[in-house]
Image (cartoon, rainbow, N blue to C red; front, side):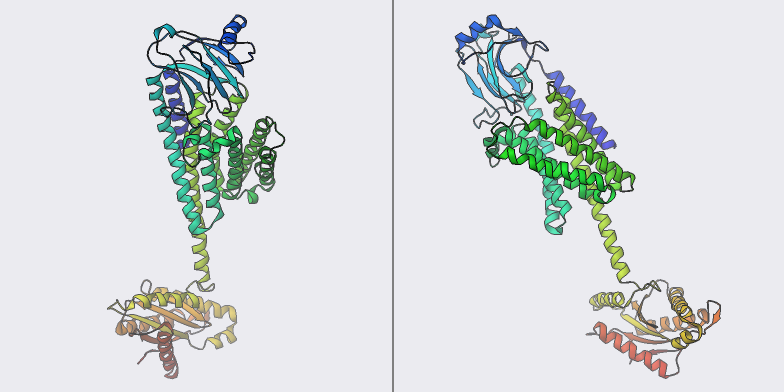
Length: 546
C-alpha cells in the first residue's frame, strides 16, 4: 500500500511540475464560422464573425476553424497542439499562410519532438510576433490543448516527458520479457497472461503518446489510425480480465462475479471488435462510447470479484486490489475527463503510466508468491508421497530414493556409509494376540525408539509390514555395529510395554557397509541376509554382513 501511495504522490508532484512549467503563450482563441476551404482570404473575411472561446481562452473546443492569437514573443517558437490522437490538424501561419496538415500517425514528423503534441514552427520575424494563426480541427473527439512556446523550452520539457515514459516502458517491457521466459520454461498459463497483459499495456502507452508510429517495426500501426488504438485498448481489457481471473482464483471464490467478468471483459469486448475491424458499418463513431461502457463494467466486476475473494481468504486477491484500484481510478479519471470535454491534466497523463509501472511490479511479486505457494504444495505432496502414513518415517519408495542419493556421493566419503535392516521379532504373534491396533502402536513405538537412540545420525524407513531400513551416512562398519547395538537395547527397553500391554518387542538387525560398486539392491540384500542370520541365531541381536 505504501509503495502505491508513494507512486501516486510522485505522479502528482511530477504533474504539478509539468503544469507549472507550462506557459501557453496565447492571448485568445476565437471560433470561426464554417469555411469552405483553407483559403487565407476567406479565413480573414470570417474573422468578422469570430466567437471567443467560451470556457477558456487557451483551449479549442471541438472541430472546425479557429483563430489563435499568440502573445507577442521573440526567437524560435512553436504552435503546439497536445494529445491530438484521432484529430487531423491544418495550420496556416504567417508569413505565407500556406496550409500545413499533420496528425500523430504521419511518419515524417519532426524528429526533434515527441508525439505527445503536434509542433508547427512559427516565423521568427518580429513583424509576425503576434500575427494570428488559423487552425482547422478535424476528427477530434475531445478538446485539444493549444500553446505557443519557445522551441528550446519545449524540447527541454519533451526530454523530461520521454525520460519518464521510457522508465515506465522499460519496466513494463523488461518484466514482460522475464515473465515470458518463465512461461516458456514452466508452461503455466498465468505467466503468459501476465506477459501478454503488460505487453499490451506497454503498446497502448506507446500508441497513446504517439511514439509507436515513430518506431521501426510497429509504426505499421499508423495505417489503422485511431481504430488501432481502440483495438489495443480492448485487447488490454480482455487480457487483464483473464489474468486476474487466474491470478486470484476468482472462479473459485467469486463464481458469479467471475462469470460476469468473463462476459464483459472477454466475450462482449471481443464481440465489439468484429464490427470495428470489418469495413462495414463505415461509421465507427459508436465504438468509444460502447467500449468505455464495457470497460467500466469489466473493471467494476473485476474489483468486486477481487474484493469478495480477498474477504474469502485469498491473499493474492488483496494484493491485486492494491495494484488495480489506483490503475482503474486513474484510467477512469482519464476517460471521464476526455468524455466530459475537460483537458487532460498532467496528473492523469503522468500518474497513469507511473501507477501502471508500480502495478506491474506488485503483480509480479504476487506471481512470485504464487510460485512459492505452488512449490510448497509440491514439496508437501512429494513429502507425503515418500512418507509412511502410520509411523511418519520414509516409506519404501522414499528410503530407496534417499539411499540411491547417498550412494551417488559415497565414493567420496572416506568415513563410509552403512545400512541396518531391521525386523521386529514375533510381530505376527503380537498382532494375533493383541489386535492390529496394538501392532500399529508397536510400529510407532519402534520409530520413537530410533529417534531416542539415534536422534541425529540415522534416517529410518519402513519397507513394509514390520521390516525397516536404517541409513547411517558417514559411518563405517564398526560405528554402524555400535549404533545397531545401541538401537537394539533401546527397543528392548522402551518397547517392552506398549499401550499398557506387555508385548516384549525386540528386533533382529543386520548391518551392511558400503563397498565399491554397490547398488541400492546389493547393499539392501547384504543387510537383509545379515538380518536373517540374526534371526537364525536366536533373534534380538545384531549381525554384521560378511
